[in-house]
Length: 167
Image 1 (cartoon, rainbow, N blue to C red):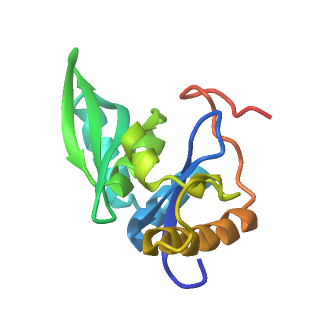
Image 2: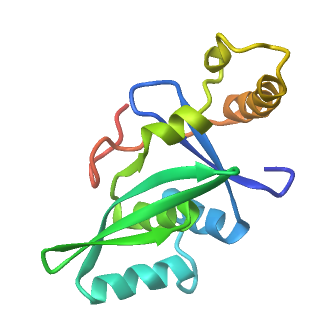
């Protein structure tokens, strides 16, 4: 973004609800490199971690944004190694950077979408008191988000890891 801040926007499959997660510059670059198909001259940290995991016979099976508290998101990575599943605490930005490298599913807990998800046309504020501070804060965030979403032209991601996107 022009402000120098970066955001990952996850879209609920089959719906128009979005989850914006503000992330750091390095994580944003790591995600952008992979999804745009650009190869870095030297491996970035997430490429290194991907190589290490593969050398150890592990893969990232899925990642889940599990909770949000005080506007901080939490995530879990689920690795498979030798027939066993290993669960690892992670920042969502790092988990997403690895998920795109392993082409694995990205999930968000329903409670997180209910608490922090936004619907660009404002349907998520229906039934709230428009004068409440929470409602005004949500509307302000929603307006910034509407402007951002309307300025994007992003490709659809595939339904299944390793498959081609739908047209």
